[in-house]
Length: 239
Ligand code: CTP
Ligand code: CA
Image (tube, rainbow, N blue to C red):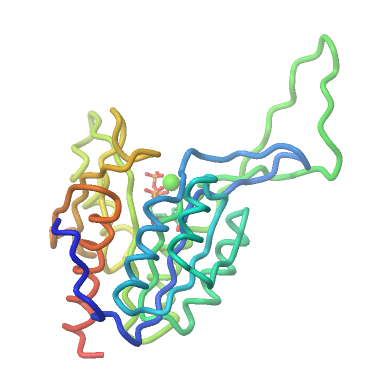
């Protein structure tokens, strides 16, 4: 990745970027969450703004240093959310007028079926009650299906590890076909890559699973490579 922003190629475009990780309440003081810092999403938002876009950042529980980065970049349309339900509402509200929606947030796949209003107490000598989970809506798949605005480019992220069923790219390509998004940014995680570190190797695939770009470098460089791929699609669609 060159890291050089083609100045202004997103001028006049409206984009929504979700960043961070959603948290699902277990009770008033506890939650199920994940380790996403939000850095890649914030770098995407900042890169889009640098290229001329009007950016809405839907920010789910950013790490403190990443929240500071939001202020440094002067991102001023920021919608803070905590749960997947809140993130879904905020993203969909922005998506009705957006040319591009990027789901960089790590969305909790499941949430507790019931979150009592009072703190769960331990009873000495008795083990904990199991926490029943229910599946969350798939915000990205819904956006890809509903197409809230004509010509909108819908972008997802996938953090994958290779396993007995296939490589990182195999999993990413299958996910791209499943989700129906226009672009999926496939990211190898584990072994010091992906979460909370400022280096990434990504492969961008289209909705059919075809590779359209590869990039490696800092999260900022990856962000610009993603916008290069998005800009090519916007230009190609003639909108
Ligand atoms: N995503 C979403 N809503 C969910 C789960 C995921 O919008 N309930 C989005 C993420 O923001 C990301 C993409 O879908 O852009 C892929 O997320 P990922 O967790 O990799 O995909 P899943 O379909 O949840 O598959 P799995 O976790 O089983 O690999
Ligand atoms: Ca998931």
